[in-house]
Image (cartoon, rainbow, N blue to C red; front, side):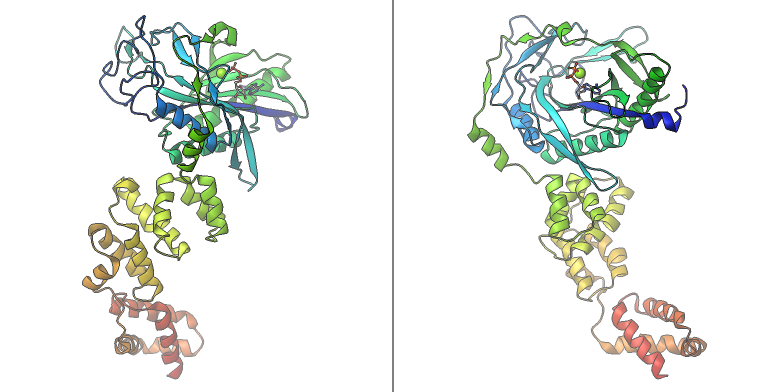
Length: 489
Ligand code: ADP
Ligand code: MG
């Protein structure tokens, strides 16, 4: 591929619109009572409905509708009260019905936007065109057998929402941020696990280029099979260069559907683009229109959890966290929920963040476990923070001794454990004076250096005191007393 010179890339603008499919984590399928669970033996979660037998009648899964409405509210969309379903006709081996049940004219959510924070700190609203409900196809597997392709219909009929953006993104960075935010919303709402590698969130990227300042869009290509956010970005970057090179060489962009090869980072033509009329959409005759009302929407709205953007703003405005801390805490739903519990029991927000980002995260990483496996109640971690704040235990001892002890005995509180393990700083001033005078006596030459102005030796004395006291001292208080002693010599 020709390398793109800077001047040429400056002449063109990238235009990206995304279509995101999210598999909804309902118990049963979109239009039947078959289990929608992942991981069963092939073709075990099927019935005459998912097998597409003639004469079977679909029924709408209420949970699917509720989840779609939740996502619409989270994306600032208008919820359509009068929904209809349509058939989108395909002939695929893993689609025994011969059509996908989807929404065409009357999708459940219209318009809306997802705000994304870019690396320069600015916020851009990525406009949503609409969100619709549909069912998934089965899975064809081409690699499991030497000669034949195998088909597993467990996934046939599993509910999806498709989130379609306007062609609003202008860089792969923006597309990456949009996907990260969308995935966060799905996870905070607990309606999809957002796992792109496993296919529960899938993304097609529509990409075109145009001369900067142009008012109409160029022809676009749609890239499929993107199984990570990084690969979506790689495909976008690749297409930008490829399309600009074609146009610069006097060619034109054909509106094709492309495949992305993650090994080479290149795209290739999968098929020429179908037009909407190739699908022969028509209203689904077996499903009644779905009417929703305002009371139903209000109920859902009132039961919505706090969303990442709200929490981010709250952490900055009310807890005075830094932009970085607020972003890290809200990036992960479970972490944010844990933090929310923790700050019910402590008002030292900064220390709460440090505890979670430091020892807490290291523990999760080292043991490869998730937050749900942590048995310690947030108030016990708050107890640890309080002991440090009250000068009852020093920070290093809290992190290296008390924190692991809490994890090992989740039924005990911080004070109890610190007492049992003899980690508390003794209030007896006598002990502290003894540690200080012992340290001073051990290094008489360093005392002279200190008096000659070499203040750096304080660290040596502090280290010695730490060691002899096993960390059971209040560093600030000790520091002050130590200086007093050294100056009095
Ligand atoms: P289709 O139904 O054929 O897939 P749509 O008009 O619904 O086409 O658009 C699908 C996606 O393509 C949307 O996400 C939209 O933002 C995006 N899109 C449309 N035109 C362009 C373009 N010229 N460049 C990039 N993306 C585009
Ligand atoms: Mg499309």
